[in-house]
Image (tube, rainbow, N blue to C red; front, side, top):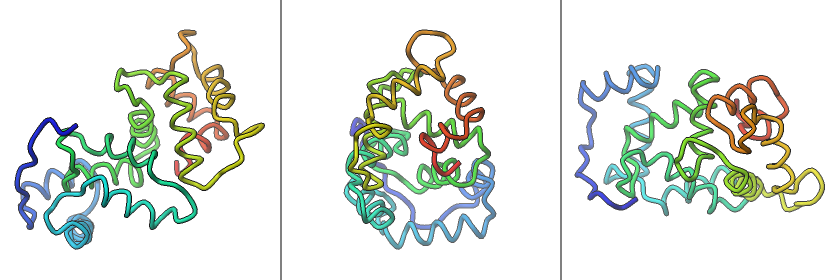
Length: 190
């Protein structure tokens, strides 16, 4: 993160950008335009920084603490690692989390959980994400079924087909698709 300098952003979408976004999001031109207007209203410079990202999430999760979840989500959204999210990055991630098919949405969730970006989710990463999800949703009870370490260990044991105590993207997607309860825990909106 922060390795590249953010390029200036045009305030209007070009026909090429619209075509690219339509192809990568399945949104209509009108929907892309509406998302763009809202993005530019909230981010007049065409870039969303971490602070503003947290402010936006806090509006949707007023009962919780968004800080840790937003740290991981921001890093996932910031595809070019320039420390900001431009409209293209933003809309592609919105499409993956809200409008994509189940596999696309689960793939995005895997990328979010794979904090080390090594193509695997280990128990430590899973504990961090479960804890961040609890904080995001204002869940303060961390005992019994809500203990992040216990929950992570159970999930790894349940989904880890290869036996390496880590989840590949394929194991994660297949496991979430085959177990609605786990999918509800790990990817609640799918």
